Amino acid sequence: MPTVEDLKKQILFDGLSDEEVAKLLPNIQKVTVVKNNYVFKEGDSTTGIYMIHSGRIEVKRKLQLDTKSKMLVMLRNIQSDEIKHTADGWETRFALLGKGQHFGELSILEGKKKHGAEAVALEDTELFILNTENFMELETTATETMVKIMKAIARVMSTNVRALDKRILKALTGQ
Image (cartoon, rainbow, N blue to C red; front, top):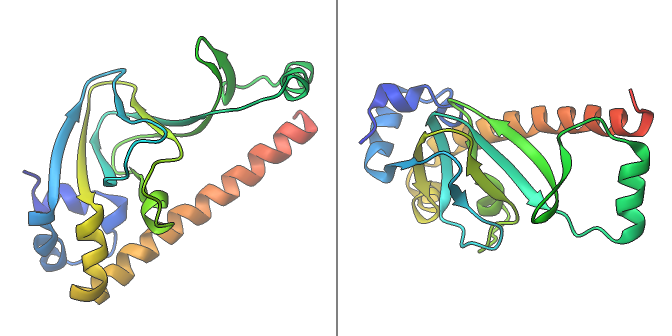
């Protein structure tokens, strides 16, 4: 079981007091995912928000590319490992995540029952999970805490949008 100190190191709980984090402890599970195993696959049921205690996670998605799109990707000669062809088809990487970072929140915030991407452990990884039901319950039982958590999610999303903007510009200009 995680400690208050463990959870205070999570970006998701940035700005929460020790007391607020202590109240969350009974709702947090700790799991271990072995290297190269999936945390979840695209289409799996949404279970919660995952926080990385140790290890690294890659979040990616299979691409349904038609022939024209495949040719464009190859012709542009994108020198990146963000879009690649694998034995299972084309895929794009959304994120490489490490200690303190979280994922899985988009499915919950959008009210989706299934994940739209997949997450795989790049090394043996320990995760903390705040399940969907407990997350939603916080809206009514701990409103102030939930506002702080949502602000932390918004800050991460803002950073991700800026990074995506740079990636798109790089893909368009080839620089």
